[in-house]
Image (cartoon, rainbow, N blue to C red):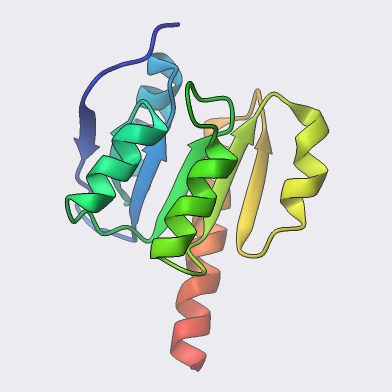
Length: 141
């Protein structure tokens, strides 16, 4: 599937968190963005790591990064490393069909790993779990 240019933003009525979704497969990106939006998250969706970094440089504020690993030019792990330099400790959901990488990623702090193919329900639960943990930590601190 071809990547998309620009971004797609879904605004939730009851915002539970702001998500930067990075997925180069258009249909997957649209489906995940819609499911997360339906669950009350504000989703800013882009098709590449470069677009994600541009959006953050332009002032986009996010509570979580949801990224595919197999992205053109810069992969999702390199993107997450760069984003976490700007936002240390930012929760990250990694999605990948490269199962060999998943164990290494599971060891990283404040992250969830979704092996492809994954269900939309599982994607929403991973995001809710990470952001719920963040909110509990903030309330305790």
